[in-house]
Length: 145
Image (cartoon, rainbow, N blue to C red; front, side, top):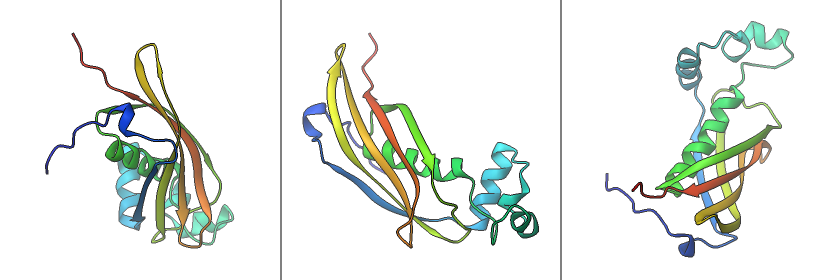
């Protein structure tokens, strides 16, 4: 895989679209994520517990969906770092659902000599329901002296 060069702030415009990237959130993906984070809440993998909690089936943990937004931003902005990512979880995502991640550049500036970009980000189900919405602030990594 060829390494992508970082974009300069001048190559980024307000209104630039990020994505979309579509992910299928499989049960295996949820189980791997659960093992890595040592997840103890069984509603994410056990149908009976999910039903006890008011869901029709196990759901995808919100941080896993948010991680997909992070991956999208890192891929779109190589050489930049995510300074903040604030998300709101709006709707449950079921195992096997397709989640479309996309975003929009909403602001850009140079603060203290550091290029900064603001983005709105969304993870949407196949039924066009916004499962995760948020904002991100990215900063261009500056070379160390």
